[in-house]
Length: 544
Image (cartoon, rainbow, N blue to C red; front, top):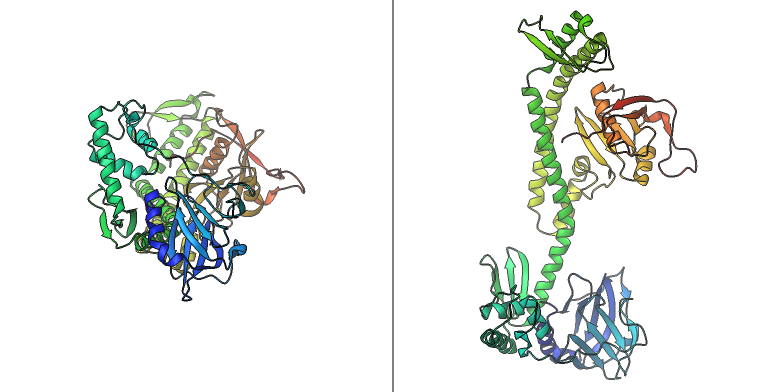
């Protein structure tokens, strides 16, 4: 509604008394897409018109307290400085605003379309300078006003959605007032039916009533909480939760509305990414916390693995090579038979040793889970505190203070999303017990991950013989020996993020990062591995 024809017309009417006869003091820009036209009246007083041609928030309002910043300011249209304003007008059939000077030159303001702009024109309305590079070319005449459109009986036979038909019949009314007129006429804005003569009459009467009310507007702002929801020259049919505030002039209402919207935009720009990052990290931490509780509550797997190992050792002669499973009498517990899954490529004794190793890892995992649970409790508490504190911020300045105050905590919590320290742009997978996998998303990230962000003692993985992402298993501390199951999971992730994703099994190179190097002047992602092992795994990613 800020650039609605009737809003602009009302502003032009209200500004006549102080703009006509004033002198252009200076014109400058200190925000992208925004132009400030400073005007000095005969008494020496200074006011400014602030124009934004930048979508999505285009506006024109009077700022009586505009001040030029000391830096990052560009002077615009210096040839207009000192010019005296003869007239301020808006075309009767279009949203074309002209600030005309006594020397017959002037400024043209166009606040619509993809080439919304402000132009400096000569006495023949030919463009001699322009604020933005796109739009009407220098030396070309400015936009001609659209011809007058009659709200005709053609609505009866016109096809398409009703609100679009009415917009076409009266382009100046604007979408909000069109919807209001249709509502007052008792019609459905989304209907595609032809209108009867009675419906056309009702629509014309509703439109006429709106136009009459716009002759004596009652400017207002509709608020949702502390947020400026909508500006209008007339009452509107809106949700009951919206609060309405009336103003004496459109000038005051538009100024307050624009300032509040700018404040909201600045706040959202600072607040939204941070809120998303904290919310995402808190949910992830809560899932990890729940998973750790589940691990501690599960029946101990170590006992089952030990039983498998004992039975296989005791009955190794009954296991044939290549079997995927074997059913044996459970002589350990004496509770009948037990089916044991096997690795077909291993012997019975090797399978038994494998289960003994898994039993050991399971016991260690429970120890790590208890420690990790305590750490996760602390993390969830810290994240919740940060989120609560962020929720209590109200302005962009509040958010900046929050970020500065909690910089270390935010960087540790989610360095790649909080806007505090953007350094970890990779895909990330938590494997529990402090182990985490980072995966490059493209060649540039692969290169950075391997050459900059992977530590010497981390494990570097890559699908063998096919193109794929560089993958790093980050260890929780130096001289840590990760369990075989953790390395296998990391290898499965590396295989999944490669051309081998659809294979049943895939070979994956595993090496300490210290043995991976990038040859000089080689393309992005090219490396040489000096010492490597190869694991055969099924390409997959963790469920979480």
